[in-house]
Each structure stands twice: as C-alpha cells, then as structure tokens.
Image (cartoon, rainbow, N blue to C red):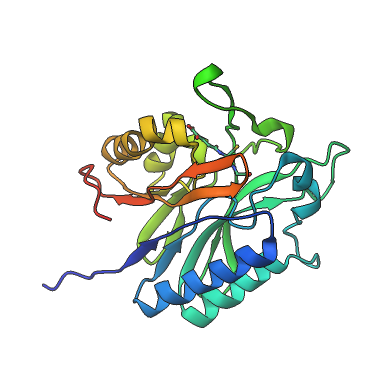
Length: 245
Ligand SMILES: O=C(O)CNC(=O)[C@H](CS)NC(=O)CCC(=O)C(=O)O
C-alpha cells in the first residue's frame, strides 16, 4: 500500500518593529510554502513584530470578530489562496484591556479555508536573568500569561499540540498534549542567542522522543532592532529524535 505523504514547511524570519514590513515577508513565505506543495506552514513567535517593550502596547491588536487586525486578516487570506494551514504567533490585545497595556503572546492555527481553528496563549513567560553571560528579559512586563492548555487540533499532518517558545522547557504540558492524542507539537520561537546555542536543538529533540511526536520549531533569526537578536535554527524533528529538516 502506498504511504500517504503530506508535506509540512518550517520557516524562520527576522521580524522588525514594523508590522507592515513583516506582513510582506509572511505572505511571501505562505505563498512559497504553498507553491512547494506544503499543506502546513509553521511561522515563528512574534511574526507580527518584535519591538522594544515600550512599543508593544501600540503595535498589538485584538483577535475578536468585529475588531480590526490587519496582520491576522492578511494571513487568513494568504492561507486560503495558497490552500495551506498556517501556524503563527502574534501579540494579542486582551478584549478587556488592562491598565498596564499588556498583551497575550498568542499562537494561532489558521486553516486552508482561512479560519482560526485553534488559539493558545503562552502560559510560561520568559523571565530570566542570565547574569553577565546573557540577557535579562522579563516578558511578563509586556505579556499576560495564558491560563489554559488547548486540546490538539486536527490538521493535514495529524493532531497538532500548541506550545510557544519558552514553554519548550516545561515538559508536563507537552506530555498532557501527547496523552490527549497529539501526533505533532509546535514551538514557534524567538530563542535568545545564548540559550539557543546551548538548549534549542536539545530541547526540541527531547520533546520529540519523550512524546513520540513530530516537533516543529519555527524560529526568529538575526537582529530585530539594535540590541535584540534571535538564534534561528528552525527545524523539524521526527519521533526518533532525528532532525529531518
Ligand atoms: O514577543 C516578543 O517580543 C517575542 N517573544 C520572545 O522573544 C520570547 C519572550 S521574551 N522569547 C522567549 O520565550 C525565548 C525563550 C528562550 O530563549 C529560552 O527558553 O532559552
């Protein structure tokens, strides 16, 4: 019997503080993945923008019917036109905006019909002080933690469990997703240079082996604005732990 093969694509890009610029890059990636025959494309965390903390409240947008969100609307249209599922992360203004102006770090799956079929808000925020060897980052200054894990969602490559970036270090959520049937796990990311070099591939491969899942690590790469860089090395890992792309 012939094996039914479905292609997936993993992307990396350098989001900058301009949503308009990033939309252009993202639409091009969606079209190219679709043209290459992929049925699912994985885009990284903060695909809409990476900007200094002070600009985050101005640049983030709500994701609710009736509210304008150009970035998400354009991704929906591109996914429909290219007949591809798109996994992408954006900054989401909460419907009840809190006075601090913080957003959610929101991971979306958009179907090939252009509908949002899953929405997960990053639960573990990257609050670290690596001392003189690395950066001090406090994601919770700009971001509200999500409170719920989302059941794996049906995609052309099987049931997909959603996690985001720093969540990669917390094995129990991926274990719960696998127990609930996940065959694939996605970790859209913007890993720091220092921690990425030490742990990115190691952690993706560990999550793949322990959960017996395909793992998709889409990544931000390079310099977003002066003083802010990401590690890159987007990859796909199979359940044996081999890096297949
Ligand atoms: O919203 C944005 O601006 C983009 N988001 C990020 O860059 C996030 C939060 S600061 N980065 C990480 O979680 C890196 C994790 C990491 O590097 C590790 O676990 O070692």
